Image (cartoon, rainbow, N blue to C red; front, side):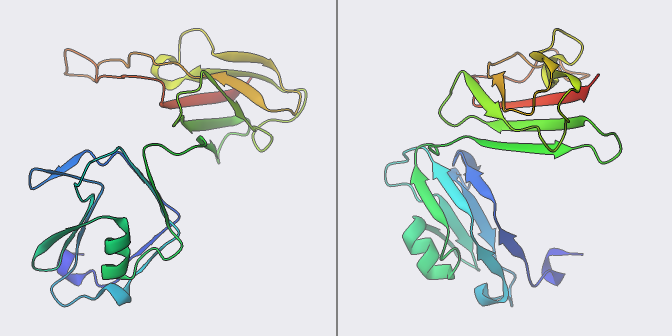
Length: 194
């Protein structure tokens, strides 16, 4: 489907962060391009969360409807009609976001994604949908899946505390150096029943 064929979209329940993407030389959190004959009301955009570092007077929301216009959150919401129940914070979110995605093909296996907005040294994770009490398990950081486990033991049914530390990712094949990993605000872990 080409861009011009796409007339309607749904953007709900998402988390937008950073505000450091460049669009036309400016930092942008959301860059929205409306089709030539499209309208904002034809789309559903609500219930999203936004966090941006302090950007001074910079407008983190850009809309291209023939002319590119930058907005701060209240003006963007007013201009588009989007996100009447959305939330916006300057800085970081106050609570971590933890997503556990179970492997549909192998019971007892999951990926845990941790957005550690405040930089806490540990986060408590609920693995009750992945493991059963009495299951032996191991948890590895995805940057070191063959190394020592971050946590291992017998699952008791309680929350599991996972250390959040920055690891240097392996260099991608064909590259001399790994991508930078500046701190512990984002980690992904592999949970495996043993």
